[in-house]
Structure formats: C-alpha cells, structure tokens
Image (cartoon, rainbow, N blue to C red; front, top):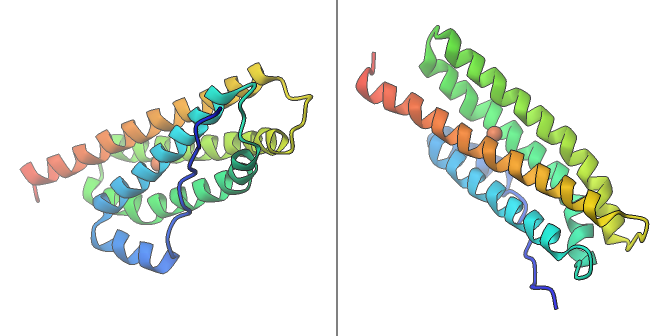
Length: 169
Ligand SMILES: [Fe+2]
C-alpha cells in the first residue's frame, strides 16, 4: 500500500505574498524555498511509488498544479527578491551574472515542468503506455535540479546579506 502523498498547497494570495515579500525579502524567499522543497519531496514520493503503487489522483493534481506553482514562485523571486539583491550588489558584474544564471535556471525548470506535466497527466489517467523507468528518470531529474537550484540560490543571497553586514556602504 502506497503512503499517502500530500501535495503542498498553492501559494497564498498574490497581494499578501507580495506585501510580505517586499517587507522581508529573504524571509519570504525562505518560505517559498520550503514550499518548493516540499514539492520536490512529493515528486520523489511519486517516483518511489512507480510502477505499482502510483496514486493516480495525486499525479493528476500534480499535473494541474506543478507548472503554474513554479511560475508563480519564480515570478515572485525575480520581481521582488532578485531586484532587491541587484540593488545591494551595486555594479558588481559577478553578482549580475549570478542573477542572470538563476533566472536562466528558472526558465529551464519551467520548461522541464511543462514536459513533466504531460507525464504526470498520463500517470494520472492510468495510461499503461507510460514507461515507468522514463517517468522515474524525468521526476528524479526535475526534483534533483530544483533542490540544487534552491540550495545555490539560498547560499548566494545569504552571501549578499553577509557582505552588506560587513560593508553597508
Ligand atoms: Fe529560484
């Protein structure tokens, strides 16, 4: 019997989230990172349930929610947190390059999420032509990339704060 998989709730109201984010960008980023890691845990549980214990309902829900949730998280990060980080980085070209890299990773993950959506949709409809090894490979590739991105983003943005603390000019 497969363990019950709980998909994380969708992000809260856009206005409330934006207010919180502008007031405390790093605290807000930490909270959306936690939600993205919960999403990764859920996708890992789906991968672990392949091939015989797949929860069709959670796959169908994940297919519906994954791409829009990810786009919403990324839009908030770029609009609020990255702009905030850019202001604190001054003319540092390496900081700008790193922010561009993070944006590029967002774009890549969103494209990957679109491909994964199709696979999750097929798992949700009990499509027997799905190759479980391919599905597992795609799921693991996606959540491994996303976990790596979250870790790198946290480290980089904490670094900006640390530099500001030592050199607040
Ligand atoms: Fe990000």
